Length: 263
Image (cartoon, rainbow, N blue to C red):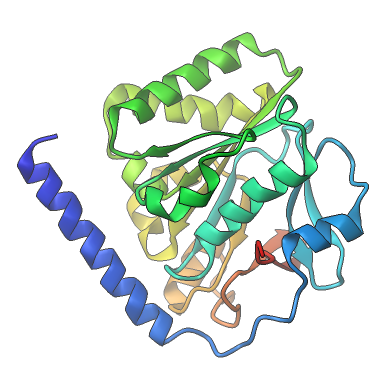
């Protein structure tokens, strides 16, 4: 990576940190309920089906689950403002895999621009690795996942591909983009489950990628026009959600749920 690119990435990172701090200062005052920690919630909910992926806790106290053997929901897109809990949701999912599944059955791998946020997840048998978006080994990872998926006929192990920040990953080389598109289209039928975050304000910039996602989770979004766009609904707003609270459409209804804290 040349010095110009390094400088550009540094400026982008500093800009995002400044925007995050500003949004946190204007965050919703709606308090997060006094939920038990993740380990306690899973212990109370167990035994869960061995094919179930834990996504959160609904307002009625029931777990929100994804069936890893049913590819119909397809890849999952998480859209919200910065500092709304998107990264925490991915981390909670990764930790839930550790608590609920044998590594021979389910593992996760993370792609992020900020690996320091994932430092507590590196020494874990359930995690394949933490990859930095712009580094060459991330390109190699996506290629190896495509190869693995081609050889996997929907049996055996499932792999969660946690992508924290789709915007940056779509700016890499053509082959990487092609591999990513293939994983979004074919991954779930071959037991690779992409779970991807984007900032709500960036959705218009990567509009062509949104069509890959039938299942969408929405978090706190302050700007009404951003809510209308990501929900494809001129009447829907998400500014009433708290940090680490999400909602998803179920038919004509909306299901709200929380991502419980890890500790």
